[in-house]
Length: 83
Image (cartoon, rainbow, N blue to C red; front, side, top):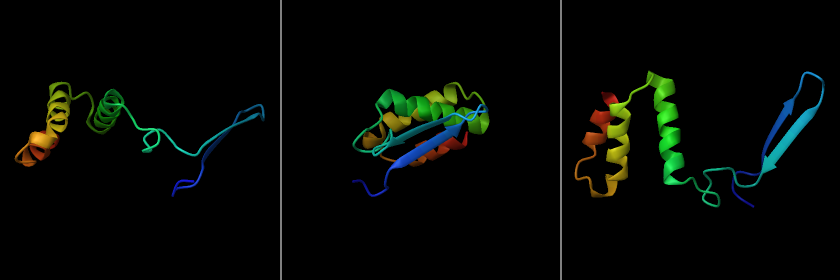
């Protein structure tokens, strides 16, 4: 068992039917990790929700994060996120 317990979602339809789903390991858990493409898609959705379509700015953030292990100064990421 994981440290978070079972994740449960229930949806009640207007006609009274109930759909229920549960998982021990939700998407993003170490047992069920996101792919790099999934992480980038999620980042873009979050950035778009926060600030609208950022286009090249979002591309810059993705590029910086992808190369973060070789970045000598993480302030470039902060600067890109602020812009």
